[in-house]
Length: 246
Image 1 (cartoon, one colour):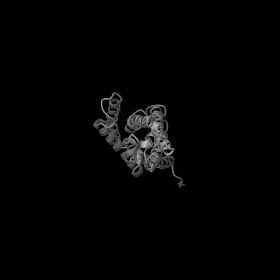
Image 2: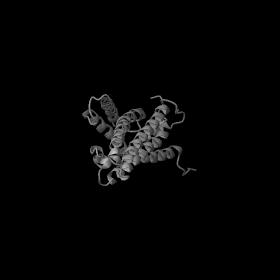
Image 3: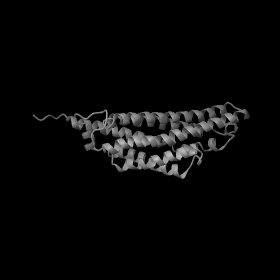
């Protein structure tokens, strides 16, 4: 008698398809903070913002979008960990830790801007100008380290896992491999005062990383993981503590 129950392989593929869909949606959610480039315009450029008139709504909305992006950052690593740990558990754990660190830096930056909003709404006088500049500097550095530097390490960690496992087309992580060193060089150059917060080097690196992450999100939603790669990773006897032997 032929059983109508789905086999173990089919069950695994269905489960991993759901994982890919969740990870893809979360990766696209990380781009929700892009409007902050405009929403934070005044608070970043006006040195007397903390004492001036006008609405705080754009900054508050921007902070909310960044919180969503930070939570999505953590979600991507949690969603992908059960799959990529079969390629290399140590690297997969490193990716989770780096993603959490990135999200923590984003939260710290949001706290700095919300503190400026709080002081402004409380009617802080001119004596708050120095405090406002300090908080703005904190936001600038947490943005550089959290959203400028950490994504490069994330690209190297997750990209190596995806490249070796072939869960995604290998061309996608290559974009990350190209963008990561450029972004790291841009951040290091700013740390040593070689250029300002915006540099062509960092801009090109950010573009390549955006292609990598956005392309991965779309691919995971539309196509999911490579079924052959999933089958190989989940084959009996495949370890989770190191390389799978490729």
